[in-house]
Length: 67
Image 1 (cartoon, helix red, strand yellow):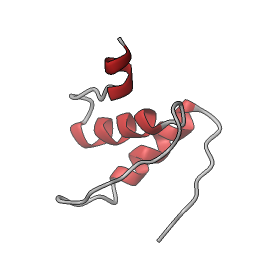
Image 2 (spheres, helix red, strand yellow; image 1 turned 135 degrees about the vertical axis):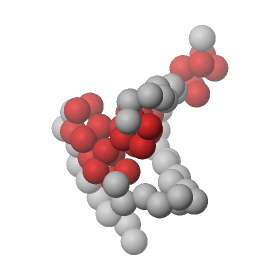
Image 3 (spheres, one colour; image 1 turned 90 degrees about the vertical axis):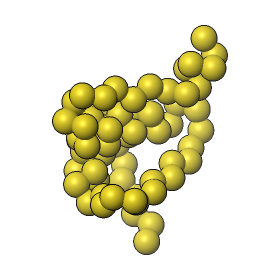
Image 4 (cartoon, helix red, strand yellow; image 1 turned 60 degrees about the vertical axis):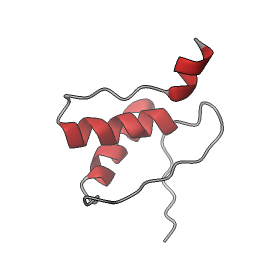
């Protein structure tokens, strides 16, 4: 199933990601695809924050490689 969600801000993306995280089960795999700057890391941060209750901070692999 493909769903489309339009986000107007970083906060919208994080809010949606936290909501999406509630639907995940152990063993689920989430694939993200998009151009540089599309919001994949922001979405990932929202999921990780929700699942870890704020104990883990996701970082952009591209940011690490560029630096």
